[in-house]
Length: 318
Image (tube, rainbow, N blue to C red; front, side, top):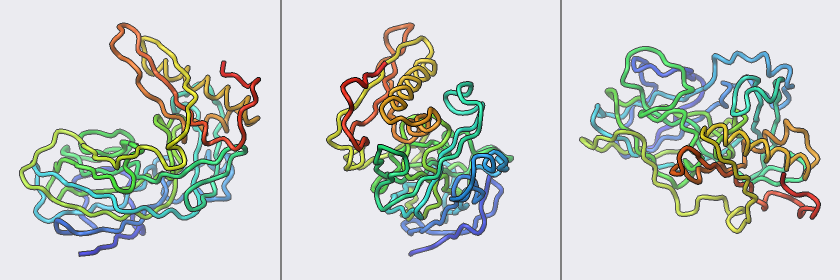
């Protein structure tokens, strides 16, 4: 059976006692409308100054809960992601004190992206492919009470795994009666790391097919992805890789991102804020090694295919 759930009502907390807005059976399909992460507060014409005055307690906006008939703890949901549809725009921000570089940027900054069908050209010198996904897909937590949505966990939630794209299948453990599935925080694109604090945050619609598997306990989320992990525009790309080692993985990642910012500022003649936002939506942070104690190594992979013009030989990474 086909169902639809609109975004007239959204949730900004996890709470196992919220009543379901929709009850479905195993094998049913749900089309869910989602507001952007700000719960509709950000507008395409908003300034950075206005953005700084948002009610940040309304982040994130979730659509749901969706109850699955006969779901109970010890079962699992198997969620096929069938399709996403964006609405032509998205936003990415810098918020002082947050993100991977909380002390490097002292002012709020908001960037609005104009989305075409499968790409955006809203920063000078680059064309970025879109790969829409839900930053948040989760079931209600086992614990009683209300919980902010920022931290993910065994229930799923704010995982920000950019491969939750069309064609992937997500498995989640059921923790409460009915499961209480919620979706939101849709991104038109995101890097691995989401370093500035956002991907391309966008209002969006997602279509899901949801199956219940009885007595199939799962300790934490499991994802089966399509065979190609990158958008078609990046499949044949070479990559610029910035490599740093440090006993602290996050500190190594910070230096990787700073070097990528310097490279983008030099190559594209953009501001440091624009370069940081670009890192948040396209840089791929990867753990290269954790075994050479005490040092960990992190690489930041920047696809050459995003650039509209080849690099000048004088524009070398630092």
